[in-house]
Length: 143
Image 1 (cartoon, rainbow, N blue to C red):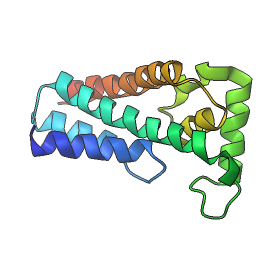
Image 2: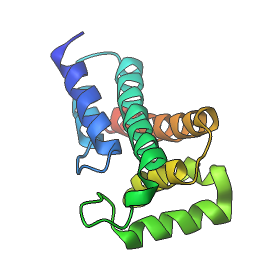
Image 3: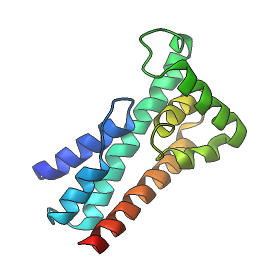
Image 4: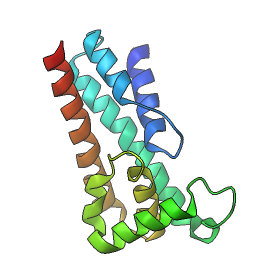
C-alpha cells in the first residue's frame, strides 16, 4: 500500500473521531495528483472514516457514565443536541453522520443509546461513502 493511501486512511479515520481533522482536502488532492484510481481513493477514505465512527460508537457504548465529566471529548450541549436528533429520527439520523459538527457526536450518541452495531455500520458506511463519492465527482469535474 502506498504512503498516500495510508495517509488518506489515517486522516479520514481521525476526521471521523472527535479529534479535529479534514479529510476532504486530502481526498481531492490525491485525486488531482492521480496518486491512485479514484475508486480506490474513495474506498480507502470511506473505510477510514467509517472505522473512525465505529470508534465513536464504541466509546459511546462504554462511556455513558462519564458523559458529564470535564475531560469527556464532546461538550454536553453537542451531545444533547445529537441525542435529541437521534431520539427524534432514530437510526435513520445516522445518514447525517457525514455532516460537520453534528456527525461525530451523532455517532457517539448512537453508542450511548445502545444502537445495534450492524445497522449502525451500514448506515454510517453509506453516508460516509456517499459524501466521498460526491467529493470525487466534484473534484474530477473541476480538473
